[in-house]
Image (cartoon, rainbow over all chains, first blue to last red; front, side, top):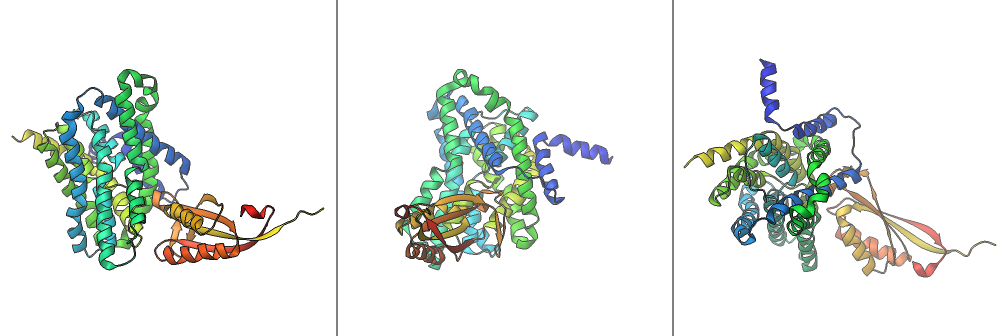
Length: 330
Length: 102
């Protein structure tokens, strides 16, 4: 019976998730496994470009004006999440800098969680809007901008430095032109301009090899997340509430937005996943500069140590089921 | 025949990678003419920095300059960043061959 249960659980997970779990296990077992930093950087550039390209190819096939409501809704959702989370995080007795930093992490999105969600949808045979990468690209920055605004308000209130306008301007530039936004948007643009035929010669690298690269990247993320998991005890109950409690609530907000936009079942699941995900690439760096007083380890522990594993193992199947339920309900 | 050498100060700043751009800009404003940056891994009173995620990266900046320029940069880094960031500063006397470049 135990075998059957294990097989059932295993069948619900995509193969790439096991690579993540292998990474976590390696870290918990104190293995010396470590991927070179340059490889991590290369893989993340590859994934961002590939996701952008794939979405861009689909964009070339449809009128852009029709997508405007989706883009606006995604921007609004990403921007609203940090403001909605602020009072909740403060109620959890988190300091203003920590609350601003965490709010930004959750307002922004995780591209790899998106990739895992689309892989799960493909495996389950559930259709989704193939230009969904556009949503990721436009949801990356608004949450960070909102987080920076919250941080600015918090530091002004506490009068703890930070009034330097040049610094804030430079920070906004880094957020809007940062690696993830640039590569996703660049990929989208290249895909849209080159179309299916134009991108055919690079398909082998960016499309066919995508899942293998994702698996390798997840192995690395597993190693990092494993280390963060060991830190959870340090931060107590608040980090557990944030890391495990927020994603389902935010997913509901994302799913409702998707439903209002009239998205497909897969589209609703993706928007729920995006809303539930937390950034661990762009947000930590941006917030380190925006709120130096914030504890960077707290945000990354919540986002990468708890929320990311929760989303890819439990969350994604849950959000797909939620999308199916919402789509079936008249 | 021995080479003619000139004394200068080398300031080594080990800091969070997120600060690199700011520190380099600040150093330039205070008279630094050049610098070398390398990515490193580090540990100290603030814990271990393995560089396994973006904001966990550490850089080592080496600046060779006049002693008063090194002091001005170090003073600024200490007062502006050291309170909330992992930063270490050290000085050493070095000899250079082309003094006008430092």
